[in-house]
Length: 214
Image (cartoon, rainbow, N blue to C red; front, top):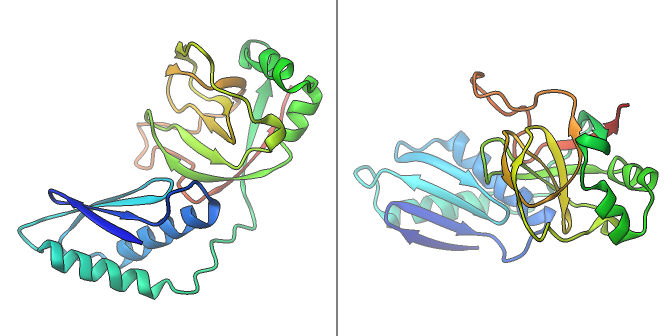
């Protein structure tokens, strides 16, 4: 683990790769920090392999923050990862206007529509993080058989709820907006609502599974 400071933000780097084990440690650290809730903590933001911790410099020095973070990290020794018995199950309508890129995915992989859907719905995914637009859900790990590159030219507008794939990840668009992942389907429920106190029904660390509806 490495800790770097930029102004009043501490960046805790747990690894330099995308892995489930590393991401689970990021979220375990985030949870431990939240439960400890030191008075200097403003916000903590988890990503794939890094936890950004914003603190109030009027209440703590960098040395104080670093000491607390190191203590919390040591308390996670032997952490085995989060176990979810019941993943969040999401209904998806695949292909057609809901999944305009399923044709290109089929062409690249050599898989039929039925095989693509069966493979995509055949796994339980982990939410690594939320970004790059509001409510966008990053999920992994995608079956290698479905690993395809991003679109050469991103779309200017991808509908909210679109389910897409790129490389070893699958994701869900929280709002309509630009995007370069290959869209293979669309959720048949609303998973992100800014009017709610907790806008996203999916949080980092959650388990997610898809099932097909027609």
